[in-house]
Image (cartoon, rainbow, N blue to C red):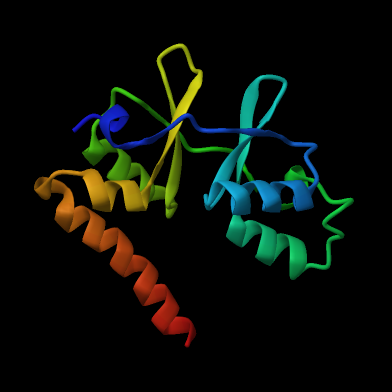
Length: 145
């Protein structure tokens, strides 16, 4: 399947200068787990709810003064909307990530693809790949327990 058939459409992105508290509210209010971060009309990173907890709160950042840039994952791995579910799964596996911003060929953001999107919407041929990605996370949790 093509990524455009699987992704969550109408992805929002935020400026790198957005205060962490505002990002946390956005994630909560939209019931989403991550948001791409942009600067000067270019994607520069990804910020997840986990980033806010682990790089923001746990490191003692003031959520009213710290910005998305302070807690985001630098650099960005993305995919095109006309790539396949298999391509996306391979990117997620290779880079150990659970979310991919989705761009069209004009390099405009058109959605976000999550591991959950793959699990929920992808064809049966991808089931083994998705199970492998999820089990990777489960194994990591078990090792830390």
